[in-house]
Image (cartoon, rainbow, N blue to C red):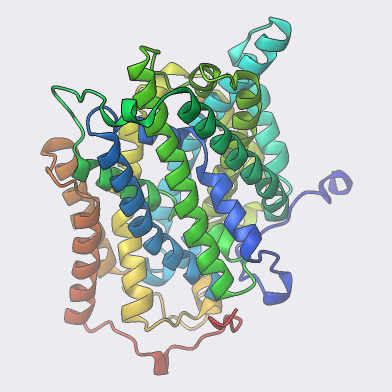
Length: 458
């Protein structure tokens, strides 16, 4: 077995050294474009029209993406500086044992995300095959999709990077072709004058909140990839602009297609091939969208493996990837049951992880003054991150309060202004206050940095 597994990726959770890093600005930029120019992001933009006007939808998308990308890029910056995966980094704030729960929760969430992605890719592949041959079997193509995901993921992050470059270019070209086709077929005034819903469930501020929450949903994976960036400057701006462009293009496409679908009495559906077939891009869209969803699913499975390895580092890389790939395949066969809960799933991610990364960002940039001892985080040799028997009580108290706040004001008593930004600010301020009260602060002077130097000069 050792011979044929030698070609597999041997990624681990140890800090990535500078001479092993392979991502420059372009590869970081294209990775985050490929990750987000995907049908699930298009679906998010579809939620907004006709509940709010197209103009307000685009305003919410642009402003929300620009703001949401900031904490995403800052979190990725911690990965660049330390060379550590995302869930390993949470040990510094939550404690060596305290980080186990977030890692396990993240693994489960990413598997659920992979279910949705596998189903969407299976739909697109089924459309392409049916168009060409007349054969249709969604279950079969969902299984084949996930097999491809496992085959690509099992080769590690370098394989993921190579895939994303080509997928991102193809998706941007397809998106601009669709924009061109739509706006040469319909006049923009039709979109601007569309009749709004009488009983809207989404307001402009809620749309903004959802856009920000979508950016936050990537924070649990960002360091898994950004720890391979060659410099802080290229990694930070590649992540920021890659996500910003992708979010505006994909969500904007969703808002445009939704608006013109209503204006032309075309059925609104989450199946991208049906949506785009109406504009003459059915077959090519099904192929390109298939690969885009496939690449996003690869990223989800890769990060799920990294989260699992944070708890069980001796399991290695390819075995957990294979097992979770099988679980993802079985879950994807739930099909329609997955899509009916898509909106709540996105909000659940925000509910569970906005407090986590508010705590991490405050811990790193304010409490620890931008200095983490990567080796001690990983091996616990000096005990800087043991806190109270391996658990930082202040972080857990803050997390529970933040998660309860987010859940209550998202599901039980939704706020007119949304809960994402409030949860983030409340959790960050609460953690900072508790750490000050308990005097668990650390200055830069007594925090030793063992990660490789990566100045912002790139």
